[in-house]
Length: 351
Length: 228
Image 1: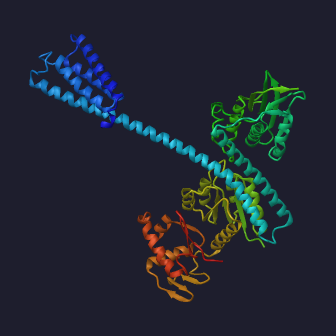
Image 2: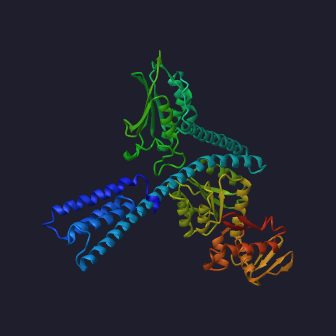
Image 3: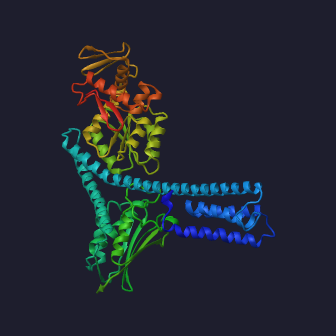
């Protein structure tokens, strides 16, 4: 119990004493209207209130103090600590017991509640950790399983395996290693961001070239979508980090391709407005639920019922890399109803 | 010759393609489903000889699919999942999966487990004699012969071995074995199981420290491997 007695508790004692005295004073002023039993109730309520916020020692102190004050000011003979008749003696001792017990109990309840709250928080963290681990292990192990399995097949000298099967296995190995590489890249980028040491190496970039280069390896993923980019011919060169911006555009386009049903339109538009490079990636899919828009850039955050695959890293990397350029990224409704990601990146231009 | 129809339920296109090529080139006919719903429908329509089931599906957890399948499907179900926690494995086995293989896996291992599962499913359930390479169990006479010599076993040792033999290739969880051999009140008495496994291994294994028949699945249970 002594552990609750800290230096800061001094104020709790003072406040407890002040509260008890103030309430007693109030009762004294109203003495013509209430009996000494009424006063006892008022003091008990005060004490319960104190117990809800203060530690155990100040609470016991307040209980003792209020019993003394009650005795001194309200029990006959008044303004002495003496107690006249035996009934009052019983009342006083009962008051002290009730005050102490209710103080201690209220205090205990509060502590238990606090513990429960902490437990709840801990289980939430654990849940998040599990989700992250699950999606990460899925994203890393699936391509590894494909590569291992395909290689085993190719090495097996199985006469049942035809030339076209071999070709298909090689394609699978290639696709899987690209996917694996992507995820490792994301993880490494995340740790770069976490470390806080990202200095964009800015140099002149042709945005059109950048976007075209990013989209090329995604052609398989975009097969079932209508993809187009509108980048004005006269868009100036801008000074940004080519590598980081590639990641940003890749993650946005890949995200749109994976999470929209086939047949959707995905558009990229670029423009240069007020010293800013403005990039918009939008689609005409379902978009994001309103209440989720604030959280999508959080690390490891994934929408409920999202397609399997994905680690919840992509958009947080987009945000991190954009901010490394002192830029901003926002999520809104697209012109055609879906999601629209808008990047604004302050950048020098060169015609 | 087609060795059997296998239904692969996995949401990952790459895994479906890989398993398709692997199993087809080894003489199996392969059906694939990419969602839990599709998987359940295909299982009902095609009555495959075996199902390979992934746990992480977007529309429904594989655990739920397993439970739904086990309401009517009695042939082998093998779980193929990236989840390697004891909790997931034990839960799947308790829900009636025959085997559990963690991704990534070696193709040889996958094929061996599939062969075992299909073979033990093909064995008549009430066969009185189960014969393996070096030893046989006569369930009617309650006798075990190893290299044609009768093995002396206590009643509990025999029950344990018979349980294993009837479930060749299948991972049996600690709880399941304890319940079957000792009874429902003993499911937490792992020490009994450990002692009897050690005794059995001494009698049937060539080298009890490198068991070939009773294989430990750490944290999960045991698997009886009869050899091919």
